[in-house]
Length: 274
Length: 108
Image (cartoon, rainbow over all chains, first blue to last red; front, side):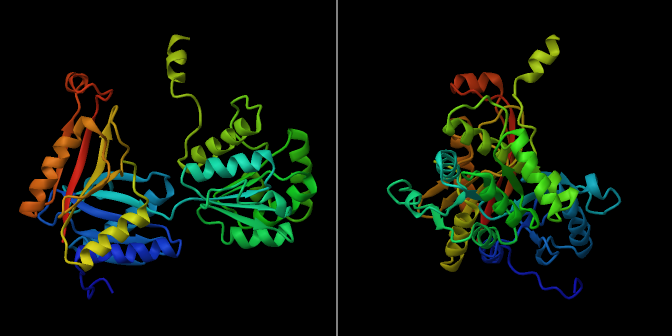
């Protein structure tokens, strides 16, 4: 396939990228930015390894495809590499490449439209998350309460089914389970724990969340699946009001997305003094 | 001006391409130190003078703007280095002081 590939003009990739984004596919776009005459050449590699375009040399394309796998494992969004950083023996080792992650807008699924869930849906939408808010109480899900049309309102007949439908494959999705009671929490958690979304958080005290996690374990969830659950949900910012709790949750979701510890940026100052 | 969602961005590029219109895309490729925009931020310059997105406000936007206008004429893509030294930054009244590599790319 590599030998016979026809190189399309680089601008054609914008259509392919639109299609990937519409189908929720994650990919990496690699562009030559310096070190050769071929500046602007592009190679797009999706998560399944399908490629479009070319950097101009078959050898370079395959070296880059291998490096893209490493890049995808980090949660970096954008980075430049010199070819010699990952393939020092290559004849193209002076070429500088721009790696850009192509990913659909992040999605947030909020289970429970009480005070915390409502505030969280609004914050998520404000931050650019495509947000779905689920509750079994239709009168909690009115457009008077949520004028933001970017928030999808879903009245659940069954928590399990509604949550499962919305979460789908879990790719690119953060799920916050903040319902009014632990029976409902547990039903939502059953729907998501097996699909492994990018983030799962469960509200409640240490004790209450431990009860739910134990029940999921008894129902057959693996230790690996359970270890990914953020429970109690949120960063420790001393949140008291529902809005503050929502802030603690969305901050944890953002930190998780970028692989950041979520600590104070200034903590190094105090560490230095100590 | 805020950042452009990826899907909107590539739709704009795709539409411009359909019309045979040249677009210059400025992308923050690399940053070091304190800079006004994150890596990956993009600004689009269209033939009719319209722009979309931002690569970081007053600090460097004027320079990027000039480079983009030149690239629109010459058709030449290039990686440009911008140094936001403390002096320059304070003269501009901006709180940045790092360096940025911005890829000025001509599409179409």
